[in-house]
Length: 118
Image (cartoon, rainbow, N blue to C red; front, side, top):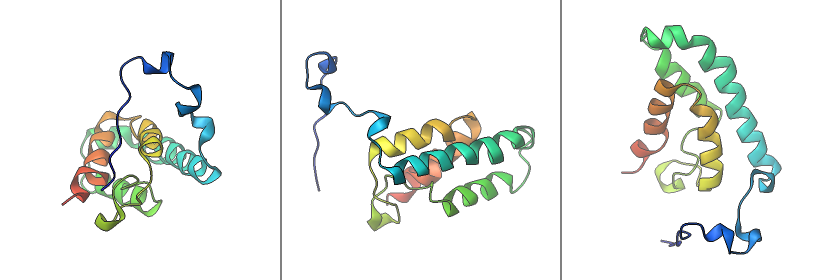
């Protein structure tokens, strides 16, 4: 198991600027995943907000399944648990778009993260 240390508060002010991750440093594959997440949420989740609010049976699970088929679930979960084993930076950026609707983001967060770790 690898361990990483967390930066101390405000360390970005005095630390090496190269140590700060910015979205511009994502690979083209990572950027494509982020674009996929944004497109999915804007085209599939947001147009269905009223149906989600009414808790239409099967809709939430269908949307989560679609997200999984697009490779948007388990992004930073270990491969040993069925995840993609990608970095936290990418997972956070994807979550930014998957959180455009609060209810969807909670279900997405549980099914693509917590529930995958045994």
